[in-house]
Length: 86
Image 1 (cartoon, one colour):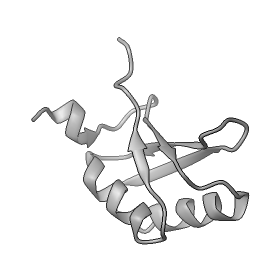
Image 2 (cartoon, helix red, strand yellow):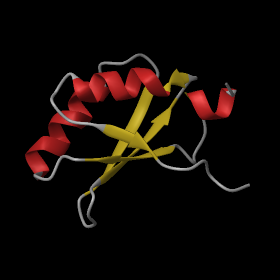
Image 3 (cartoon, rainbow, N blue to C red):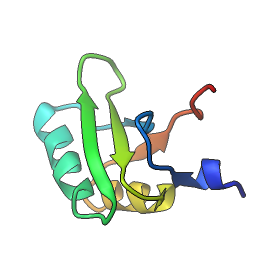
Image 4 (cartoon, rainbow, N blue to C red):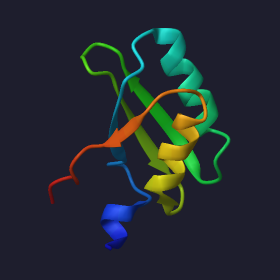
């Protein structure tokens, strides 16, 4: 277990997730559900690529499991991409 692998840390890099959502409406639903979590500052959607991606920025440490579970609650999956490069 690692603080960087298990959490999204505050900052301007965020965490990128892949998702099986395809339609723009589905991505917007995911974004709305994520804003219900405490500490979510911004969610950027990328509908130009496949599979679709979204980037989550936080104002405090947020568990990646919380993000995955919140996306599952609206019927989709969220798969975190590799850690950012320093």
